[in-house]
Amino acid sequence: MMDERVLYEKLNQAWKQTCKIVLGDEVGELKDYEELLKQHMAGELIEKPSALSREAVSVPAEYKALPVAALEELDKLRRIKLSIDEIKDIDTIVERLREEFVYVGSVALGKSNFVEKSSKVVDSQYIYNSYDIAGSKYVVYGAHIRNQKYVFRSRIGGYSQFVILSRGYNGDERTLTSRIFESIELEYVNDIYYTSNCINCNEVFFSFFQYGARYTVGNLQLSPDKYKQIKAALLEEIRDNLKAKKHVSLFDLFMDGTEEREETKRIVQEKLKGEKYEVPFDKKPIEEAFTATSKLLLGKPLEGGIDAYEKWLTKETPYYDYSPVTSTFMGYSTYISRKLYKLPINVEKSYTTRMEGDIIRQITLSESEASSLSFSNLAELKKRLSKIYTISLQFLDDQSSNYNDVVVVVSARDVYKAPVAAFTKRTAFSIYSRRSVYVFGSSLVVSSEFTFNAYMSDDIKRGFEVDNSAHSSDIYFSHNCEGSSDVMFCFNGKGQRNSIGHNPLVRDKYIEIKSALLDQIWQELNSKKDFRYGIYSLVRGER
Image (cartoon, rainbow, N blue to C red; front, side, top):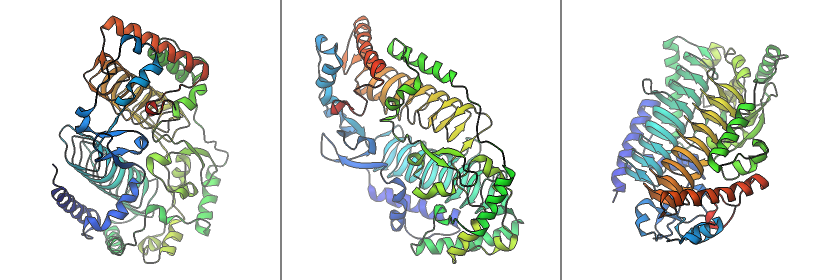
């Protein structure tokens, strides 16, 4: 049994150490900031009673209406035996196995310990109220965190340390990103405060769309001594605001309608006059990949083109949020992903494309303006920053090609209506796929290939309606499966082979039955462009 007192003491020490490193000094006890920190996880992770014990289980919000259980309770599940006659029809299988369809939560695997109110935690220690954490230590209210330590209310990041209240930041194995506060969309940075869209920057405050910046305030480079003087004064104000429960977020600093902002708008429009915001895109590779994947998974290719299946591919996908937005200066049509980044509702008023950001980068405050920035007069601070303030999730690196309707692409190719894709090829209607190929309608999949509607899973080869599984292949309508192959309707299984539910069959018989079931799926999906069951709707009978 985990000692919650020990966990809190360790996290409290980590919080104080992080504040001292990032903010220059401690600001008090961790427990005094829980309300501020928990805002970040609203609706992400919930607690509900186990279907097996009635004990509280931490699960993703997608499981809200589903029966759940803690990982350590699964040995209490009753396994349903099916006769050969019962496994030839999908409706009969679903009806008979419904009691087995229990979704697992409070998952802490590998070398994980001291984990509380969290799930999907792997090889991590001292984790509280967090979700989808791997290879990390000292994480409080974090989500989608990889290889990090000392992280407090932050999300979507990797290879970083000492991070508070930030989103979308990364380093790598050789170069950690360190010391970040109230910032978004960063790559390879250190000592960053109230900043967005910066790459390879160090010691930056109140700056936007900077590349390689040093000792910068308000997009203006200063001498190291001048910068340190301004930084020290601002950090003191931040600490005082935190202690007084008057914290100001990055998103609170936006002000529209000022003369300064109108002048910036005029400059941007003049420099981009006649420029169109568009990227050449060939949809053919996407169509070919979708056809090939459907043939591989179902035995026959789906007909009618990928767009005909958009509703089916996105109706249950966690985090899939493809919201159109108009850029603030040029009125370019682009997109944001609110659910993944947990963005406030007013962010579109300051949303900027990369083309506009390239102009904003060159606009600076004067040295006198930069030197006198202060939280003590918030209205004046917002007015001055309105000249340069922009927020963008858009990150389109030069290594990516042939993409359309995206938000973030990193070393990706042939991407269509997939808001976030990294090191991925041929994907559509998916969100945050990484190091994967031929993935469709999928969410948070890593190192996977040839999948339809695979969610929160790693290393899946040929998967159809899969959730929270790993290191498995040829897997259909399955949840929490590991090291399994050729399984259908398998929940909470490990090392399963040639099985329907937990009913192993001889190989030839399994292939025969699988072929018949796939034909049933293909017939309905091909004609209706939808299918009555999804991985989250098996217990309800239909979507």
